[in-house]
Image (cartoon, rainbow, N blue to C red):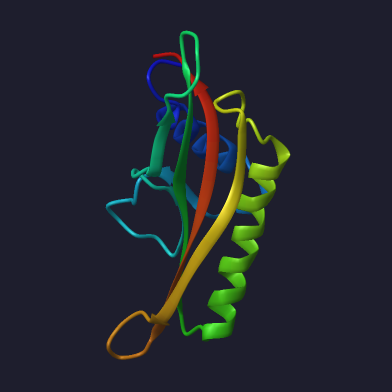
Length: 146
């Protein structure tokens, strides 16, 4: 795995989300797309709370980090409730992908969603659309060789 599992974890999340039936019709990517479509899920480029446990012996160490997964939706003529429910449905699929394989295809020892932040509001000054984003925090524990 090298000195970190972060890149493999990010790639595994993108692959799992891209293959998920519940995200049909949603764009899935690594990093926020340059062009924002109406329904997107992306694995964030940042890794937070990233630590290595140096209290271990042998040729490696434990690693923990959190990777954000963003569910974003924009709906013209939609209500706050409609947008929230669409985001919630996609978030259920993200949770199912993580729960289906806690090792993310062997990229880590364990992963789970440990929190989220939601924000929604008008998508334009004229009030023609609504937008919402839910940022899910996926915590990961891994063993890395250093």
